Image 1: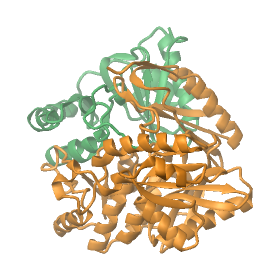
Image 2: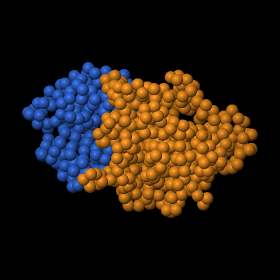
Image 3: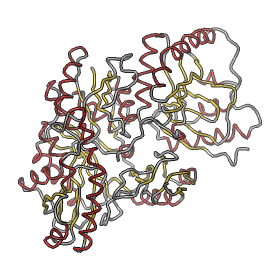
Image 4: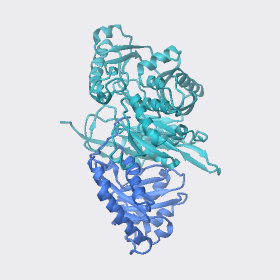
Length: 432
Length: 202
């Protein structure tokens, strides 16, 4: 049984997925957008695909599969989710329709489909960066949120409460989009030269209503269009702007059962509206006294290192309890292997995406041992390397690291994460 | 010695975890222990194998790095604290934490022969390939047919290092030196300062 694993070279997810596949004993072919130096030495295990052009990637995968039959495909981010859908369609593998994966990637398309299906979403309008911000500001309702159509990790998402703040946010997002334009690529741009041409999505933005309320993240697995919720993460730090850098995720959710049911129903409705059929989803949902609001839904598993906060328990054939990671479940599903009962572990669990402390070149991180020593803290991972630039939101999208904790209650886990973070000190130097 | 020792756990998955120690644990190359019997005479390895409920299957000690492999589903926080205590106790004990590698005999002779073949492969094929990305892979040792490597340059901390290890180096070993039973990366990837591919997305 051979799995095609789509791993962009910038992903954090490599180890988790490669090692999960090894544990399951499946053969793996890793596909990336840039060639591995070992590709000729291991032609069945490594392949380069044109992630910028899903149709081209599907044709490349067809050629590859002619000599190395593939039985499943897994994507790890928004862009490769579309590529995976195209390949799945080409090879007849389990996957999502291409249009559904593409709609999940594009915030405007997603909003249109969800609104048309009656899913609660913020009121939204599509604008271009060529528009006059002063004019737009006078026509907007406040508070509102300006956001790019495709960037990930809340990069470029800015709240504005007044016309003056709107104009400032517009100009700032315009600069972010101009800088990021070449990162957004897909079919129709220009094949292999696509990376030099700004994508149309980089010339547009959404202006949408700010929806107050508690925000949660929903992790789920879709099978034949039916969503099974694997976990709901509370986000105890209010995400009220002006920027929307994530910090703490804790599960199980402390929201009332009825609220959680509304959130799950909202996510299921969104899956249906987008036409997603198979595979993992990650959704951001807000809940307030008017119910659940779908903020975003992605046809991929949770990003970064955050999946480390999820652990599932199942019994093997001999009745022994064993752990399974989210990645194992995703791979099993993709390959049509039996997916064991999906019970999240009994303990509460959480992860903190360590906030960027400020702009500068990272020179040292102090206090990691002290943070690690905080009771309930399992791991403190610094993912940025010394000498790398720390870029705060909204321009940035990269956390300097992650803290993981487990304990009896969500409250204890949250407290442990905060205590560990308080012991970290980031030493930086101004950039040249 | 011992009380001020700083240890950072770096789990790879629920089965394997690297422990980075602020001082050298064993300066005499790499020692790998695949059973409590093999650990006899090496206080640190003995203590780690004896951790209750961990079902430790492998201990690898090299420089300031201790890699522990366990079969138990017990989470690393519980096991890791016991490993940390074992490391501190061994360092404070005043004796070598692990015994020197025994003189070549039996499997050691076979390992020496494997080492030569793996070293040839690394020199002739592996390192020229990773050098294209500014990387380097150092063959540290071969013990019981398990190859231990350390990555450097562009490979150290690279987001695709595990792909290079599994899909590149391990696959080449299976093809050219099929007697090799496994490969262990003992690199401190957190210390990599110039990775070829740096993870950038959330």
